[in-house]
Length: 252
Ligand SMILES: [Zn+2]
Image (cartoon, rainbow, N blue to C red; front, side, top):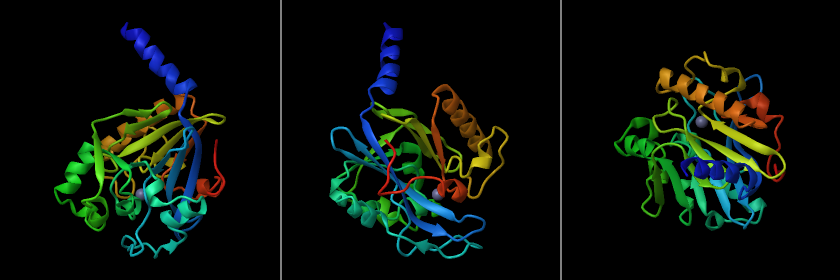
């Protein structure tokens, strides 16, 4: 009985995805050689016309980390959604991969959405960790509705979040299934760049816990192999980003 149910769930993830399109947005770039450091967020469209945003980019008053050049701002997430005729109220779900400043700049706009976050991330941020302080007025806004998760969770058929702590305590990555392309893994900041996608990776910029970051990397390497992932998108890889389609183009 147990085995049948698990089998049915696996089949529903691979065969009957609720998703239709994936859009990639580059809301800003830090001009670092050789290819720049993109600040991305992502939009999913479901077959029944719902919209799921993943992260909300950097705020207009973003201050680059020490030693890094100032950001070159492009269209922010609200302006990019408007290119598709969408408003913040059109967003039904906001997956918050983690609460770093470059991922939470416009969260308070999405008051119509259910916000999806790992409980570990929410609790450490609410406790006053200075890392998450600069956008607290965005992610800790009284009008926001959170659904807190404890680990890997299937949100819809064809859409899962995978807990990948290490960069932050409650970081999560996203695995999704598109009708034509197949599976896409959004590693987010669990894997910042392609060259870190290996089991012996070292501590990266702003990683909270090196051993956990390495364990999460191994977890995602296994997911990519076992799930036959067609595309893995890395968190801030400027060279990869130059090869990817960006909104208004999309993956389907
Ligand atoms: Zn980041």
